[in-house]
Length: 611
Image 1 (cartoon, rainbow, N blue to C red):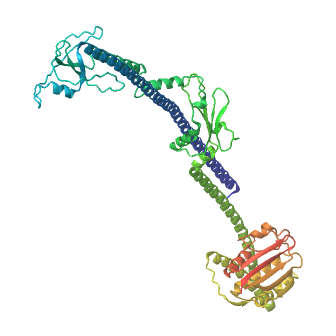
Image 2 (spheres, rainbow, N blue to C red):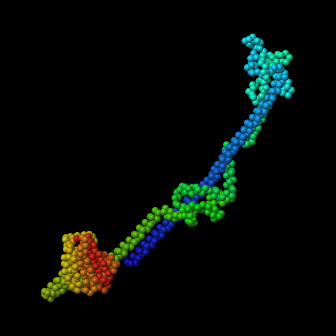
Image 3 (cartoon, helix red, strand yellow):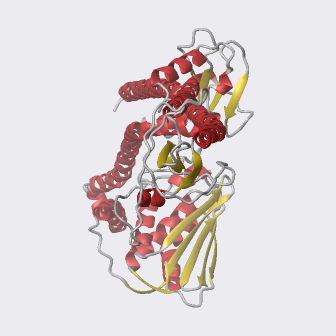
């Protein structure tokens, strides 16, 4: 891929990602604004409903209070009226007793006057009992044979003139007896008092009946009773009738009059003790569960009457506060203001958008990941492509050298003079063989890497003594090491150096590491090889004092086709596959390989293999 194409794709993908990001932010903002508007409308509707209820409850409280006051007043009026009626009845009873006493006096005077008249008109008058009167008035003869006279007198006596208006008498035997009428000593007189009298001239016995109360007195007494009762009724009626219940219209009229009263303060129209519970209930009815603070203020003055807040010093911020009038129908009085603040409004709305935010953030993260991974893959492929190009160039160079050498030797063999010289012929044959072996090793290395990538490389593991294998590899590399005057230091201190692995691939690993130490060293290489045991592992250290590497280079040396820049060392050749091959073989043997290097001071490879 060309550099321009790469940057063009990168810019397009960046713009697309930014566009998606901006659109997501826009939709999230719109969703937040919509949720905020819905929340505002819901709170305003709740407050309107709450204020309407407060107004109705306030009127209902006034009606209830006024009704209770009226009931108390009515009960007091009833009790007072009953007491007044009781007093009137007591007075009536007392008056009745006085009248009765006066009547007894009148009756007593009347009877005494009548008795005096009878005594002055007749001789030997005697008051007899009803039984005696019945006995004397009988016409039957007594058992002794004596005659019996029965005389009845009906007389009407005028008290003033003392004149008997009419009478009839019959003679009767009597026992003389005088009796004075006195109600203090005896009041049990019959309705008609019977007298036995004798005519003054003839001495004829007579029976006279005197009514206890005259018709005039009786009529007079009845008139007095009627007048007294009528007076009592008038007095009771004058007290007024207590109704069974006060008129509802009258109660509402009194409440309306009280509501229109200008001097009633706001705190007397609101029950602050139940305000919070009613407001909370109203919010719950409208599915609003967020924490809130509220305060009641005067509308005309900036005066706070009541505050309900978790933190008294908390400010009611305009963006979180909702305001409504409590009594918006009042024309003459301060309607009062209810302010409700939701301190966690934004977090609550964001919480309601959690699913939308999570999905949007998740989508953005996925897009960012895909974008990053795509760029990473493109860069990686670009680097691999570049490294493969370098690899092909190196491989072509590595193959070209032995092929050219073989071609020159083959052309020399065509010369008859060379074929006749057996020493030159043998030398050319050796050259062809060595270059052929070299070419075959390059091909084998490339094929081994390909088999490793495909997982087709088979390991023929046997018991291998690494101390011995190190010495064998160093012996095979003696010519290369001598060519650069390498200084070797070998410390095979491991008492147990036997591992289970493939001897051929292990020798290739050691060859690659020692060869790199030899190639990447200035002047005479100083190479140190040591073995040691730790727990159940065998540690192999291969160190040099060559050109070293930076930390960034150390992280990439095990990548395919990667070659450390050698600066002025132009004689270093290779495919960039050796250390990648080493790492794959060590991993297949369940081991690890580490590198520590410092620029211009050398490099150390540490291999750990299980015993």
